[in-house]
Length: 52
Image 1 (cartoon, one colour):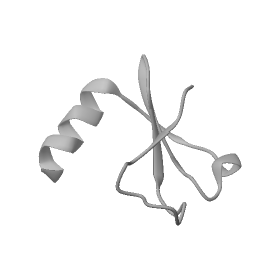
Image 2: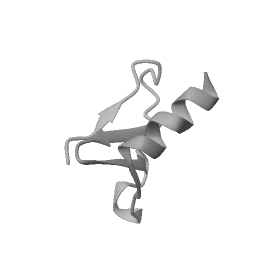
Image 3: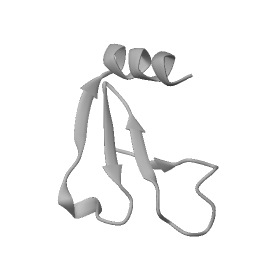
Image 4: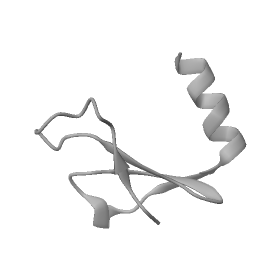
């Protein structure tokens, strides 16, 4: 997976990283080896709609 950080994360490095491919992976940038949450693209889109 190719991981991306938000452009709003600044230089602190304390943020969530997202990888959007066939599924969407979400992980803590401070502890990438701790694992990731994987959701469907449909679930990710629904979550973003609710957050906006």
